[in-house]
Length: 314
Ligand SMILES: NC(=O)C1=CN([C@@H]2O[C@H](COP(=O)(O)OP(=O)(O)OC[C@H]3O[C@@H](n4cnc5c(N)ncnc54)[C@H](OP(=O)(O)O)[C@@H]3O)[C@@H](O)[C@H]2O)C=CC1
Ligand SMILES: CC(C)(CO)C(=O)C(=O)O
Image (tube, rainbow, N blue to C red; front, side):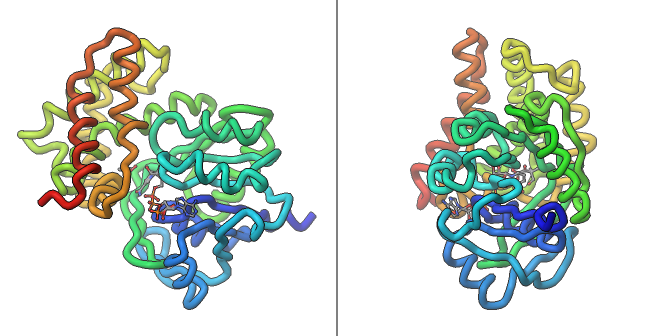
């Protein structure tokens, strides 16, 4: 069957992550990238330009689309890489493509899979611990891979879809592992984003700032509060205590990403909404529900919301 040899994969919300993935998957799959017109125009004209650890060069053969009518029926699986603030809107826009098909999310934060599950039965949760950025229209850069991609069935009868997805991603040369508790996996990835994304966005600094003597205690407090909330939610994190995770953060993750800027930094720089309410804002909200104090997460979420609302502030 042709689709088994060269699966058909729409990527919804193709920016830094989605275009990089499209560029990599193009060698093994037929890729449709739902992206903005500026990216589509540049890619149609001269291909996708990639640089960094996923390869340097120009990738031809990605089909850019601007609506569900441009995607053929019966796709193999869909990957969502829009910001969490756009998940519902892009699912609505591509509902006809999504319905009845397996859909994977590679987004950060908590809550995307629940939204996607409103549009299809089989949802695959995912995490990607690599740095991606957009350098210009149809031009992306990939840096600093700290852990393999992780994918696991979130809902539905997704075992076969998960195997296919992992096989395709692996054959494209991307390190990937199955995760049999992807709910915890999403929280485990969110710890990194809760720790560094808002701090780097507000301070306009790369990830190394998280280890600075003036900042480190705030990062530690964000994580301690998150562990307390995760415990109340019954989430089993891979680290027994907040201090165990903080040791990993400061010895592995911050050094791995020291020189790069997280996605939230680019959101604020570009005057876009951030994912703060799927990260620190979400922890503050859950903390309130459980009667757990989360002053640091509440405070930093408020600062990010202020910065979102005042994009021209010096
Ligand atoms: N960047 C990174 O290093 C990493 C990011 N992530 C996560 O991956 C997700 C994506 O992040 P990232 O790639 O950085 O974000 P980007 O903003 O670079 O990419 C998302 C793209 O989707 C576009 N988009 C949104 N809605 C639509 C639509 N309806 N049709 C077409 N295009 C649409 C956006 O356009 P517009 O901006 O105009 O709305 C944007 O170009 C986030 O959840 C992020 O947290 C995870 C790991 C690493
Ligand atoms: C891992 C990291 C920090 C990579 O940039 C990320 O997830 C993000 O930017 O949102």
